[in-house]
Length: 634
Image (cartoon, rainbow, N blue to C red):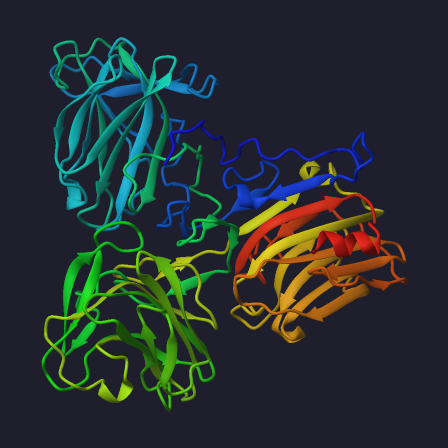
């Protein structure tokens, strides 16, 4: 994690686009270049939103949360979400670490022999038991130089962790409780303090920031004018991290940032992860010892190995010596609709046993689909029923994310998911007695309604929804580079599904410049769909009437990088994919456009969203030649 330069409103200076069509040497250059392989920050012209937290694989190969700030009004300590106790706030009292006059001053009152404090949970009241959070902020000495920061025992969310922070010397003292306390010099007298702590219970925690008086105690008689300066409150959900990430400003809502994802094995950048909304129906996704998972002839050793998120929270499934089925199962849907796809995914790693079975079970299936997985090679094989698909993706450090998809074929039946340790992966031997001590490691169970797995969604006592990722360019951020009369756009991407979204519809790489003056079905678009082989389709439409359209088959649903170019000019359209010869259309008009939506048909609704990685988007304000289209997609 990095302490970095603070980011205001989740935006920062990103890639600069050329405003010229050719360089001085005559070489053709794009007017817009969005390179999502370089990681954060996101280009400042893109408006990104997602209304929930979400996970990614970071540059270390570990599963963690996307950048987030759960605290509200992070620079407005005078706001009512901050409870002031025997103290007050003077707003905009000095220059903040980002150079703006937005830092506030916490001022003690004159109450005798008491604490003078502010509560920093700032409207966030959904701490989750077992989850780790990094709470941080910036402080600068005024008349008071020190503060005691404590995690209150109210409601049992925290266990009374506390420490004293001296913002004149940068020294931390009087540390108490299991937590990681840190402080770093942020320049100009400012320090960034932080506490990494694991919630002991779910609910609203109390974080108190108490001034320390001239006698060195936080219980003293105030003078009504003394205090110190505050700025940049942040509460972020993390997994393995103990230090805060780059600060991001919030106002009335929490910040949930874009996801720049990495390969967990090679650590290569995969691009900007865009996904549709999904729900993890499996409870206690990391706690297989919980009663929510029914164990049959199986025991669970909790926290037996380091999981893909880098912490010691993976469990071990152990088959007993009873000669019967050895399984860990959970009912995730009571009454499923006939013909619905469900996908179960779980992270597995070899312990003493090198094989496991996973399945979609329950009365919703005539023949329950099961697969076996070799936890040394990742090879999967169907052992029962007829799965729609299955896979095992290496997740680093010996872990595989194993996935199975099945379609319900019994109306109003129940859907369950289960995991079984196995010494040999032979289905006929699944009921043979096991050792009672050997088994496999397991973590991160996820059950989803849909034909493919999406990024991991942690759960505890209830299902959890991850909202869709939305990215768009509007206003002058769009018009500054877009040419209404002609242009060419090239998209480089990885589609990790076969082109369908969860409802069977199209999955858009982008809706290129929706025509706001003519409702929603005008503009240029590039989409993926199972209906084209599966494959891709590029088109220009006005009020739902195609002016030009190109489509072709393309192998999707893997890790292969794809490139598609689409060019437009009145009565002159063309498209090329993966270095293939361009196809053309010489008849059609152009819409008037005002925006670009990336990875979805409608950013504000998150509809027809892809599941995959946007890697690059490049735009030229001219209709490039057919040969150039072919060359640029090679």
